[in-house]
Length: 254
Image (cartoon, rainbow, N blue to C red; front, side):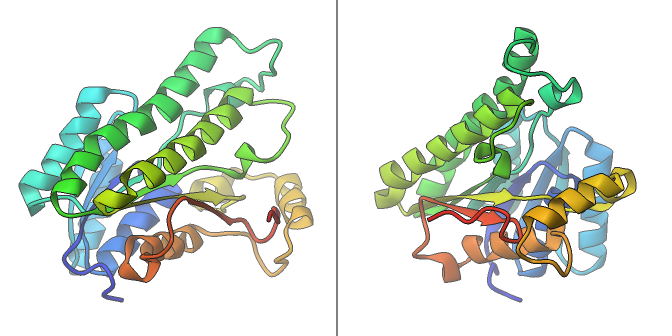
């Protein structure tokens, strides 16, 4: 549990998965900056990390705003002396909220999803890479979704934005590998964090179990955090340019 000792990691986006990422990275010895649009929620998680003996700072982050993204990177460098890892873990679900299809999705909703999910992740990359290259290398991680692979009658903007993140990751991996940068994507399936558990219908759980090869349980934020910790650490030193689907076997791709 000390694989990330001495590393500085930004977790961009809290919530069910992001908060667990921050906890796990801190438990593994990293100094964490956790940013979220809900700064108070991020501070609650950071208080928990510090109470457990970890090192962490909270800040407000608007994942669609260039100045906000650069500010969280500058905060990490100013507070902890540099940057070794950046995990972009936020998303807009605007088209899902209206169950829009290709033909009836308002273009302003499409633009908002792409602004946050595709453009925002590009901005994270542009802000983080120079600082990590200065340190001699580092890790870019992106949280995507199984929606990038699964045919969906609704939420086309969300699915398109997640596919765009995969393309971004591959570009970073091949272009900046010589600079010591590794880049990967974690694509979760259905992850039963606290908020989703409280609002999930029995039908959703049955649907998820029906798709999964693992039948013992549905995924949890800790499953994503465990994979993230490995990829951020030297144990993942030979893994780059990959999409790791953490989904209980609901997708089985070669």
